[in-house]
Amino acid sequence: MSLSAEELWVQTFRYAAERSPYYREMFANEHSTPDLETVSPIDKRILSERNLDFLCVPRERIVEVVTTSGTTGNPLLWMLTDSDLERLGENERMSFDCAGLTPADTVLLAVGMDRGFIAGLAYWLGLRKLGCAVTRAGAASASLVLEMIQKTQPTAIVGVPSFLRVLTEKAQEMGFDLRTSPVKKAICIGEPIRERSFELNAAGRFIENAWGAKVFSTYGVTEFANSLCECKAGKGGHLHETQLHLEILDDQGRPVPDGEVGEIVGTTFGVEGMPLIRYRTGDCSALFREPCVCGRNSLRIGPLIGRKNQKLKFKGASLFPSTLQSVLEEAEGVENFVIIARSNTDLSDSIEVLIHGGARVSTVRDLLQARSKVAPDVRQVSADELEALQMPAQARKRRTFVDLR
Ligand SMILES: [Zn+2]
Image (tube, rainbow, N blue to C red; front, side):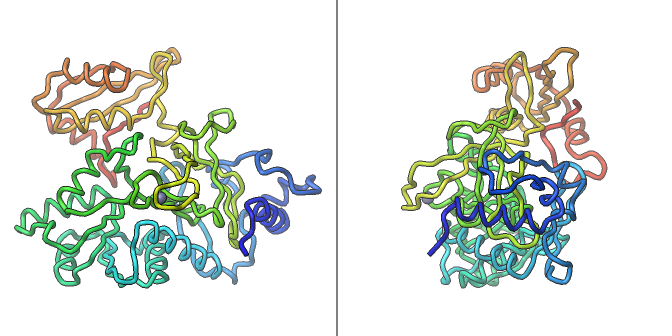
């Protein structure tokens, strides 16, 4: 019989308070299990300063060390025991099950297994548990991935949307129509494929058209060793409640109502190596609780809206760059763009949008005003100028938002 959320919390609290140097200190004066909602949340800064104080087991129990991608601050070391790897695989098995994968599927992983990232490993473990055949093509070479699609005939692919776009372009060059391939499902990681309303965004629509495949979004957090994947309804990623507890909090740490955007805060259940209690991810999204058409009643997490520290203040309102980005991606005549945020003397940020293409500046400005309720400065610039802003030296990824605050 599975334990209730309350029982899982008591278990996590007792274990962490006894074994983790950080939590031992934090809970030194707690003589019984506090209500989870009363525990002070921690953020990435604390995790980074006290990284190994979160470890609950001796080093000889560790079987896997991964690192976080380091979107903010220094990358963290995250250590997993044998039982944590089992939990990770089980999580991913349930996630792929949500997307409807079965042992009959052959799944191509267009994701790296190396560089200390947890994602590729998690997918491999989950697919193995599910009984799918796995092709580990990686994301280093588009030609190699396409060759492996032709040779191994996968029925599903796991990859980052922007890499799936690169694959599409390369396939077109080679005269390979991806719609003729047996790939019928694309599990999209790391980048959003939906708007806040759950409608597919430009990237999601592009992949469905070019591949003739259904897209599924999945959201994962290394420190939770956990991911939430959409089912065929495409109405948010399903939470696996025996492994993770999620809350959405506002800037003051208060819970926000279902459907409203705030920061994703999680508590892990069943973790041996480095359990976490009310960890603020810095990611912003919303929770949905009504039963899903797929028959699951688990909590779902909506599309990722942005990072908390990217939130823009604009003339008394606040918004995420993703709101402007999705308008600009759809705008006719905008071939490329960059949004630049600067700090103003008052409490408002200044936002400048640089575009390239045939669109008129005034049209784009009106469109932004109509769709996002803000009217930032818009300027036409050359393709080269945009390129320099998007890919500065040492950049790993093309960026369409530049934060100069
Ligand atoms: Zn569902």
